[in-house]
Length: 377
Image (cartoon, rainbow, N blue to C red):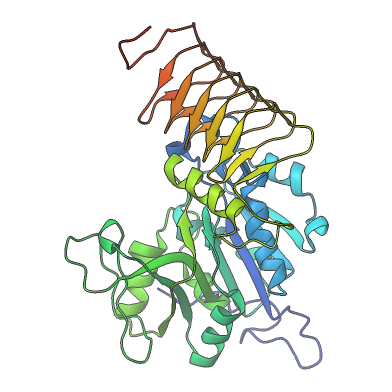
C-alpha cells in the first residue's frame, strides 16, 4: 500500500501548532449494503433502518457511539441512501453530529472507508460495520489502539464455534499475525467483529474509486509489509444481524436485556409493546416479542420471539414463532408462521401454515388454508 494524502493541515499530517482543531477521534459507519439475506424486508428499507426492539437498528449503534463520548460520525451510504438522512437528520437527537457520504457504485468494505476520507480530519478513525449488534466497550478498543501504537486495531470476539467465520490469530503481545478463511479446523476462536480503529494515514493508502476489501486486501497487505496491526479481544455480546434468524434473535436479546443498548430504557422482559399497539385479552407474548406501533394482536394469539412491525395485524388464535411480520401485514385467524419472513402488506389467510424459512413477498395474498404442512383441515 503506497503512502499518500498525509491529511489536512500540513504535508506531515500535523497542523501547525495552535491551529489543529481536529477531533481526537471520529466514527465511520458502513451502511451501504443491500441486505439481500433479509429480503423481502429490505426491498423497501435498508437493513440498518429495520425496526429492532422498536427503533431502527442503526439507532442502537449510534447510541453506543454517543455513550462512548464520540460525537463526530460519518455514514457511508449507498442503497436507499436518502432514507438515513430523512430519519436521523444532523444526528442532534442522539447527541452526535452526522454527515453522509454516498458511494454511487459498490466499493467493498475498504473502498467504502476510503470513499469517506474527505470527511475525516482526526488522527484515529473508528470504523463499524452497520449490521453488527455488539456490546463491547468502545473506549477500551480505542485505549488499546493508543497504548499499542498500532496503525490499525481490530476488535476480535471469541465465539464457541469459529468454523463459520474467518479467524484471526494473534501473538502473545496482541499483534495480529494472520487472516484466515473459514476452515473446519480453526487455530483460534477469535473472529473479526467488524469494528476497527485506523490511523487516517492508513485509510489514505487504500486505492480510491475501485472496490477494495479490508479483509482480503488491506489487512493482509499491511501484515505482509510488517506493519503493526493490533487486536482488542473480548467475549462481549456480538451478533451479525444479516439473516432473519439472527435478526429475530438479536431483537429478542435486546428486549430481554441480554444485549445491551443505551437506546432502550426501562425494564426489560419477555415482550415490548409500543405505544398505539393493541393486545387483546388472552394473547400471549413471550420470548422477547416486539409489537410495533399501531399493530393489533388478537385474542388467544401466541407470539414467541416474534418481531411485529408497525401496523401489522395478528388475528385471533394465530401463532407466530421466531418470525418477522412486515409493516401492515396481516396474519389470519389460527394461522401458523414459524421461522418465516412476511413482507410488508402481505395477507396470510386463516389456517395457513408457513414454516421453516418461508418468505412471503410484499403485497402477496394467500387465501384461507392456501398453504398447509399438516393434513388436517
